[in-house]
Amino acid sequence: MSDARGRALLSTRPGIDFFAPVCERTDALDEPRRYAFYLRDLEKEKVDLSCWRDWNPVRDTARQVTSLRTIETPDRITLTREFDLRGTRRLVQSFTLTAADPIIRVDVELELETNQLPQALYFAIPLSTSAGWGGLFDSAGRSIELDAEQLPGACRNWITAESFAAIGDESGAVALLCPDAPLVQFGDFHFGPPLDEVPRPAKPLLLAWPVNNYWDTNFPRTETRTIRLRYGFIAVDDLDEKAIGPHAARFAQPPFVWPVSGANIRTSSGSFTASR
Image 1 (cartoon, rainbow, N blue to C red):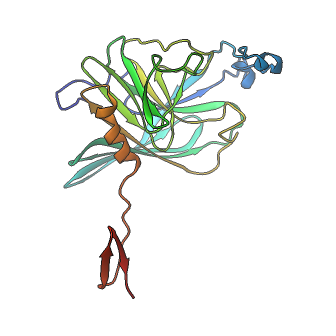
Image 2 (image 1 turned 90 degrees about the vertical axis):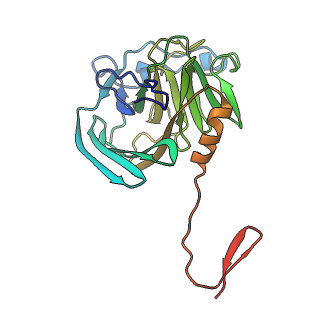
Image 3 (image 1 turned 30 degrees about the horizontal axis):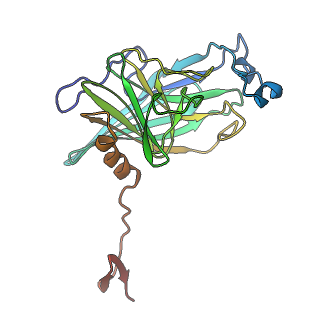
């Protein structure tokens, strides 16, 4: 994959291509429960001492692509692929490219297997970005530079984005648009003991983190419903909110279209009403 200037955006690795699903779990041969990564101690938590443990998660990539199909129309192409992935009953991704929009749209349908043991699902984007890259995301109505503009003690292992998370270097940047699922990890898999700063190796991962049951809040231990999510991906010239923000805002709030029948339509003050 390359941008309009011919810049290679991705650097794939075994089992991980664009938006590759990865299931992360504890090692049953070591400790299958949540004690593998966090040993709760209320006395320590009262004074903000870490209860994290070093752990060695198992990460499974897809066993195979079970279905692949393409639909092409005059103004768009959609590629749909279905995976066999441990921890899921059904996982379908659809990638849509349109002639009038630079954003690659990614639609996901996901059904998880019933399993109360800790596990997480990621969608990994393996980038070709050089070492020392910068990170940017938005939260509470403003953009934040990874590490540099975060408060001391703030979580750096993962972030909660309002609408986008981006990585860039001197050659340009890419942004993940994530209005439906805000959790993102920069650079690599970082669920574990707190980081003082995020490592910046060459060829980093940008990780969408839609689902996990690691904690006792936010997500149920088992998820039985079908999860539908929408992501976007775009290449821009600069790692800058002015370059990314308008795309993220438009993607987060697409036009709402509702069919109206009847010939007698009156418009007023920018709205419309249908008379009987």
